[in-house]
Length: 460
Ligand SMILES: *Cc1c(COP(=O)(O)O)cnc(C)c1O
Image 1: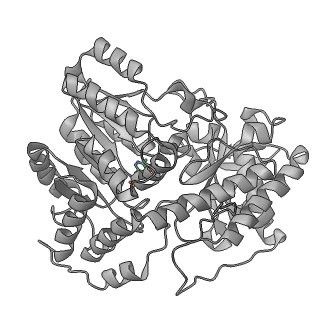
Image 2: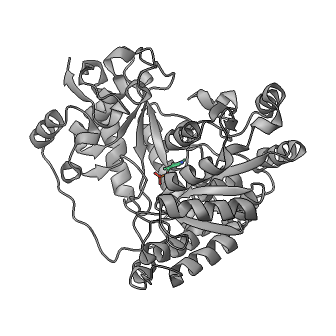
């Protein structure tokens, strides 16, 4: 029988408890936005209707995770929840040794301190803010080896997270393998718009690094979302489960840092996982200095329990299909309404191309910052600037002028409904309709570090 009816991505859960949201009027939003200096980071969450600032720590936990919270074993040493988490990490991801940390950057700090020596080079598939900073603080230098396609918002290549192996070989030739402690590989590359890396590319990368005796460290913050794209788009994987694909991805790497606030469906938590015994012993020593004892690493027992359960839920096929399905639903709806977005649609959010949306606003007048403010004003939807404000200044004081001037609509997991997605797309479309009347912004206050968090603006 022919099957012509579209199969939807409906949620594999139902609601047991809801959190009431405040609906605001245009006048209230206008006032709130002015008080926030036209910076969505400075809005009070109370004044936000749909919050798409980030997918970090904003997921909804399941009833099982909440039940797990009640089973926290808050012993200082050897908590039962630690052993549960250790077993889950071994079973689901295949890494041998586990060090819990308070969140992803805690693991990055410890790992960077152990593996990086002054003058080392760390190649990676595009930088991430905290990851690169810890590599630099340890004396290393990050080198981007992602394929060129990743820097082009309109290129539709399905695996824009791939490593350009030629770029890596050139680095090895130039610096020698001894100065490269590891290659830093992210699955679902955040800064490229949640773009996946292919299994084939990982396999080839493993072969190349093995030849030179170089480790691969995996930023596995969104590994399950990456696995979904491999299942959907890579030859030979459509019949494999997300669980199998996740384990295979991890098998090509030597260790990982994890921000469990993303894929793993918890509000706080992370870990370092590693296969090599010596590195593990050193990490177990260092974690005591920066995080806490090696069986809690800055977390309560209940947090580790919720994480252990969340990891199991995160690699279920039904969950991830609905998770990414919702993001794709929003992206397709926006595209259908004419809103220009980064293609292909990634795993954790929609990135609107502000340069194309507001072509009459020069980059110096902050088009993405302006657009994020206008979307909030329209409907109370909070998004985030990823453009010239986020890029900051060079050491000589000049602004960076990034090629990508984007507004990120990040989707928390299991939090919003399809009707919310419709409201979001329609808000963006309504702003798009009146785009010609929109004027840019002027920066009124500029903090010295990471200015996007606290900068204030006035209307031009
Ligand atoms: C969020 C994130 C991190 C850092 O994790 P935190 O839990 O915020 O410290 C590292 N890498 C990627 C790709 C992330 O998205």
